[in-house]
Image 1: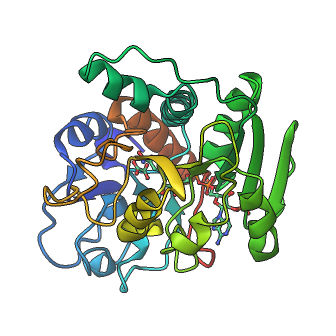
Image 2 (image 1 turned 180 degrees about the vertical axis):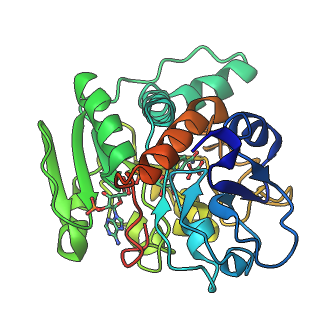
Length: 314
Ligand code: NDP
Ligand code: OXD
């Protein structure tokens, strides 16, 4: 099939600028941004981020949905989602950004970056003692969690991983499921959350969970870093945990409500480091060629890669 005669793509995005995606996708296929409203039989693929509800269900010949992100909660939340395969992002470029973010935040807490920045503002010359042996627990030991684990172990941290099904990984103690959660948390000083948002994980990072982290360590308390999804956590519970020093510090890239409302006390808290859901950003220049290659391969009869397990929810 030649260029523009191939299956068309619907760009079904809200909260993202469709322009760069449109420009790159339309080099090889016809891209529709505003469907004519009803059942366009020429559309075979949707490239989606928080698509408008009921939009995809109207397309009679939709063959696959490509998520613009690694997480797919924004796609699965549509109750009328058609039963077609969903491909999520697994890409070196995204994984590297997340590894950088995790390493940056772990090292910054470990080397007391927040304390020193506050001291510098007040021109205070005071050494903070070294934190010593610190264990980093990665909650969500998938593509992103495992890549971060590799770098953190190479940096000399003791690393542990928690997942739904038991994983094995060189140099990392692994835990799985509900039974593994308590022992995982009890030996973790710095918790890194890289879980997908599913009905099972919603609200999992709450006060009760944070209380189970190890606080007797050279940092003077537990640290939590969330770069998974905001609704995994309870913002109010994090503030409570900071106030009673269950948590000594936290880095948050994601929030229950995004953008983080200007009225949120998290913005000004001296022991909170905020980034605007930017830990790993989907770069169309890297991702569009992967999507187009998958569409071509699929049309040659090859199986799609990086498929979402709809039953598991991620
Ligand atoms: P993966 O699907 O590769 O890994 C998910 C991990 O979470 C797996 O280890 C899985 O277990 C585990 N998990 C899922 N459900 C449960 C559960 N109920 N209990 C215990 N463990 C569970 O995803 P990625 O690593 O690629 O991405 C993780 C998330 O990171 C995304 O879903 C997205 O929300 C977020 N993200 C955030 C970004 C940002 O900029 N802040 C950028 C990119 C992604 P198992 O191994 O058994 O399947
Ligand atoms: C993603 C994200 O899921 O950017 O990829 O949040």
